[in-house]
Length: 418
Image (cartoon, rainbow, N blue to C red):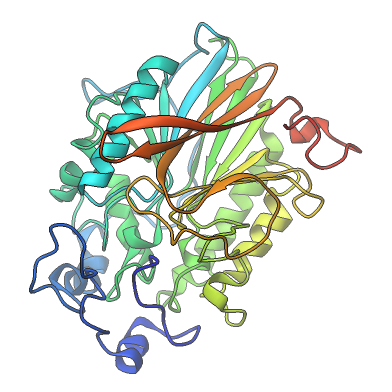
């Protein structure tokens, strides 16, 4: 859920139990009061929410569950589809736009996208990342839902590159907006990738490797996109396939472990909607929103996944979920892996830090995005804030790292970053 939505009264309720216990919520819970363009009559659980629970199991029943994703292949088939970059730019770097929690279709999203397009042109960005919550509030009703155009294609016109998309809790809503209670809805976003020029999601989780020199040699940077919803939902999963310890999460963990082991990329970047560490309102995995019990709401099993499979093996974890901008410092706890939170592409936080994880830079009040630049000698993260009224970006911070995590054996955490 988002900062402006209801949180279940306790962990591990099913969606039906939550609804009976908490009710439909106060006026404006599903579409918050004061949101631009919110219909006056929208209160509590609205029509798209109800459709979400009813249609989730039937819309794409033909799609297989839990199939193992392959390493991303060059984009072929649909004419005009924007290709994955095949070599670094003239500077010897790949430039990648990072956004999260963007899919409102509101003026703020358009302003941030316009600012990002300006930076993309200047930096010759060849790839973009969408860190989940791609279609507020409930995700798509089908793989051809008009909201794909309203909340993704039209706002991002001009950023004409492939977008590596990640599933967020709002993309997997069930009866409750943003609950993550119906992961099967995410199959509609996978199916949409077959017809979009921008949207790249070959499976619910997948990896994309970008070559160092345009050849088939070792990659310069590799992205590992996760589906974190089954282990961070606000309600208990009811489909055994998506239980926290069910076949889907077991297979995803095996895949991630094997893919990180096999990767020969200089830089490794894990993408997941829910963060490992976070100074914003939602908090960190294992204690999301103040919950410390249960198998779901707290994110305890996602915490274990990050700590046991990702930390010390990937250079970055990139997440959204919190509507803030944070570049946290790598520490002994993370074994050198750095956490980014970039979820301010359409909404903002409450203006204050709620926790004290060491940070290189953070902003809890402004909209913005980031640009990752990966080269043979360094990886740079540029954080931009956006003035919504003028649609202008401002470079607020730059962090540069020269030593990959894989090369830091015995080095102090954070070495090479400044």
